[in-house]
Image (cartoon, rainbow over all chains, first blue to last red; front, side, top):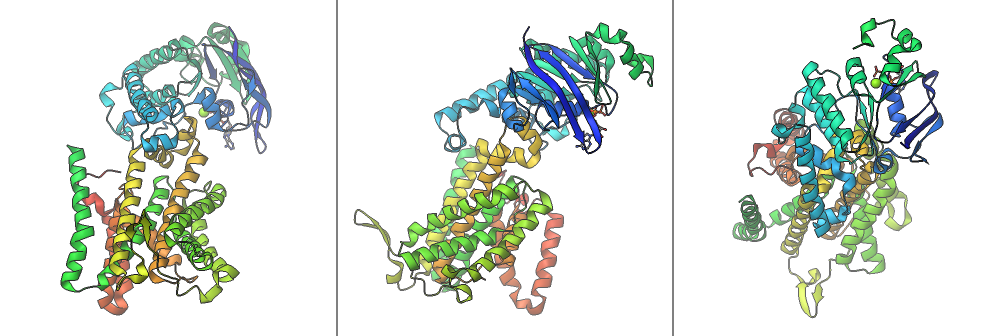
Amino acid sequence: MTELLQIKAVTKRFGGLVAVNNVSFAVREREILSVIGPNGAGKSTLFKLISSFLSPTSGEVLFRGQRISGLAPHIVARKGVVRTFQETTIFKSMTVRDNVIIAHHLRSNATLAGFYLGTNTARRDEAEFGRSADEIIDFLDLGAQRHEIASTLPHGHLRALGIAIGLATNPTVLLLDEPFAGMNHDETVRAVEMVRGVRKRGVTVLLVEHDMPAVMNISDRIVVLNFGVKIAEGTPKEIQENEKVIEAYLGAEDETIGF
Amino acid sequence: MKRTRNILAVAVFLLVVLIGVPWLIEATGRLDLYYTLTSVALLSIASAGVWVTFYIGRINIGQGAFALMGGYVSAILVVQYGVSFWLTLPLAGLFCAAASVLIGLPILRLRGVYFAMVTLVLTEVARLLALALPITNGAKGMVSIPLPGGISIFGLTILPDFATLANPRPAFYLVSVVLMVLCFAGLYRLVHSRIGKLCQSLQQNEELASSIGVNIAYLRVIAYAISSFLGGLGGAMFVAISQSIYPSSFTVTDSVNFMLNCFLGGLSYVFGPMIGTFVLYFGWDFLFETGEFQLLIFSSVLIALMLFLPNGLLSLRLFGKKQG
Ligand SMILES: Nc1ncnc2c1ncn2[C@@H]1O[C@H](COP(=O)(O)OP(=O)(O)OP(=O)(O)O)[C@@H](O)[C@H]1O
Ligand SMILES: [Mg+2]
């Protein structure tokens, strides 16, 4: 397995606060890697650093050996590293289908002028986006909501739509920030399957999640952050047995880390 | 089905404005209406520009600056360089678009009130520039600008020389209405193409838009350039009709009105600025009778309208479902 992403000694300071402190790890092709840690550990900040919504104070992120830190987020997305948001972030007043169609932006062959004039390339793009959007919508079980305005969807469907938007960009690496938050047991089970399905499509998945049973179940490997510092890295089994991790979570109940 | 209805609506609209209105004006002898309606057409073009910036989620109170800029560009080219007015018309638009790229690059990072405030200042800056620059002839303005010449292709007269017409007003009316129709047709296409969806994505969530790979800075600048192009076009045409331009030809009040026109017509409808301009312009004139209470009544009605019809007059769906 090759290393797709390398996070190299990345540090992010917000004034006096070190949100991410000298964190290094690598992400392999087609794995599901989860980043866990208590609230405020720096997980979301790490994701923003990887997707280049933030620039690291020091250190760098490499994608396929090339530095992506410091590039504009849309350029990093173009390279294949795409982030979805912790909050349910969608285009609220568009329909589900339009949300997914618009997210195909990176796959356009036509230029803006081409879309304006309705050239053949543009029309082929539009047809392809529509077809692909429908496929993604069905894949994520959103078929019945296809023509609903996104803001009217219930929570679980919003998360699915967030993932659909991510998938539509045809990412190499998809960063999902708390995709299971606010879901009940059944919804989570379905969402876990969804994420597995995403990986089956050849996508490497990076996950931030607090739902420990789900994380242990789905992850190939886990990275643990505490106060911005990486305290452990390994398979779910290794993480569950790791002293430091248990200590970090000791404030909470033991169950949080178990099944 | 929907297509047929749209074509029909456009045909009726064209018949009314190009034939019906002139016929009515001639029949009733209200020749002053030519000027009024021409103004509405041109102001609605400038308002349409403001609408485009609304469409990417920016409140633009600076369109007066570009109307003024377009007016001066055209006037200077006509008077000092003897360029045909019809050529200066697109040139004025393009000049404004280019200027707006330079202005927009830094200021389009701002959102909400901050962007609105900066654009408001822009109108004032444009006025002060017009006062100060030697080429604009300062406070004295530029007067007696020659009327537009004719256009002919292969000996075929497309537009007559306006100076030879006994009364150029009907001609100005027709040209302005055609210009308006072309601008709105262009805008309609924009909104209904993928670009419209991209603009909406900016309006709804810029961060998400950039995470799906949209170059938001680029798209914002393009939208602002289109907006300013329309402002310059409207301004240039206005100057040709009044044959004069002063630093006070377009002021902060005009900028505010352009924005109100959009609000009033409806921000989610392409034709909102057209309806808004029409209603606002005639509403204002209509209230002239009330003398000193004009502004008070006018403002109260506006506030009431915005409270009760937050999505603008077109949300009444008088014209069918023209969802932008
Ligand atoms: N833009 C910012 N400016 C200042 N401080 C920030 C900023 N973003 C995050 N922080 C701080 O950095 C720390 C890490 O935040 P982050 O959002 O990365 O945590 P997290 O691990 O995602 O937490 P949660 O599990 O609650 O989502 C927190 O103390 C937070 O307050
Ligand atoms: Mg977080």
